[in-house]
Length: 287
Length: 166
Image (cartoon, rainbow over all chains, first blue to last red; front, side):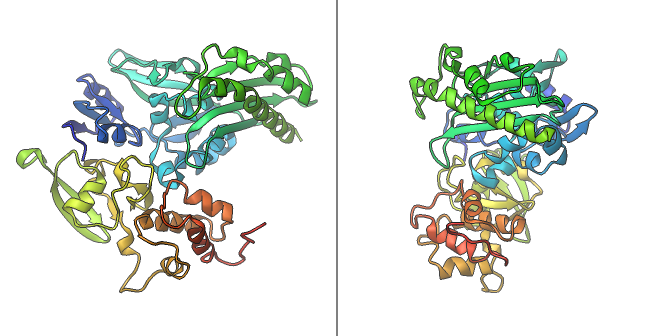
């Protein structure tokens, strides 16, 4: 039993959710983060605006990628053909989520994004995919690129009266992806993650390269890997662009899982492994 | 819908029977099942989604019932492990748990049995790695897990891949 009293509403559409949230309270998505906080008495909103009946679980291919509703679960991602084709990085990320299938059936990508926890897999993966969030509020709808969606630890850049509707994810078909996660044990949150996307042209020259780190700072950190563009990427190139990754972390994240100094130390090897995996995957895509 | 003292009516199908209860709207699904509907197969362990002892199926999908508001599941079909054995006849998976001493106190069984059943439906011949991955998110404080893994592997459909040193 949750100790504090609250009102639970589950509007039948997005507009209803926005209208309800105008009266204050907290948005409920999959429930795997908000409900335990409420059970522990750490959060006591007067109202819960539940998105589950608002039709926000669509997951479809579009002309240039994916449309992914905020209520899509990790299980939805893993079962989706369009995700496998257009966003294999998200599929890999979803397959490594801690907590088993019961969690994957319940926890949502949108909920994880709005929890904005530095230790979560989701924020950095969304940034690496160049996802664009669609949010709705009393002043209308607007788009927020994933790179601008995280204002700080546990702090999304939405206004308190705005609701995340979903994401557009541009297609990464034909590109290679790599995802590496360092964690303490089977049921631990990530200490450091790295998500990489690499595209090669017909002769093997790199035309696109993205590397984003998660877990190592309050918000996802994009690493400049533009030195790879126009080159046939070899191991030394990967090593060179990831060698100084720690310098891109002015304030490494520290918590009970690992101190900041540890995260700064592991960031480079985690980054290197993800980028190497993306290059190898891109070479396979080209072959 | 709101009744006496702010209680609300909840309709659920629990292990095949249609049930109604007047519940406090703050109830987690776990609370409603155990305290209002007498369905005590799911256990209250951590209440934070970590241990898996409260696992049920909701409309077919395995779920941790401490991570769900009961009112949000109004109208859903819930299955607990109590529905597995029919007429006292254990399922092959339950029998395997019995035969390999895969449980002692039994507190973790809702999570372990449903995770294993769910895995075997999707992957009839899982590897040991796949079994260990599937039961992650479920804590057992008695067995050390090896007997649980052995029980699940013994239910794998042929051809059974080598589980050790594969």
